[in-house]
Image 1 (spheres, one colour):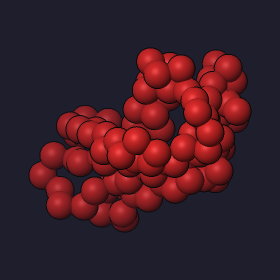
Image 2 (cartoon, rainbow, N blue to C red):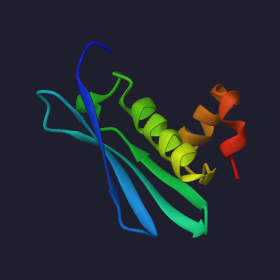
Image 3 (tube, one colour):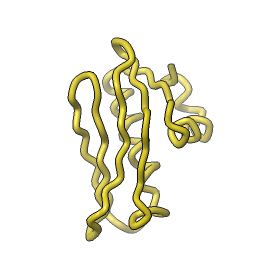
Length: 98
């Protein structure tokens, strides 16, 4: 992917969202999560508008969640079908799945 994608994280404590912006585009990708129990988050929704689709944006959102899970020692329940598919594609993430 040659475009610049920036990811920001809006953490509200018991829930949050990752936002993805592609340089030069108004559309924004989104991955939401909520806390299921201390140290366990549910990745419940991933959305990438058609205008920025096909550029790896959803994968970047999941990677941001994975990076934070490693740093914060979270386990992830992949309730979102896209996040679940990414866990199947990345067996090296198995230790993070709740």
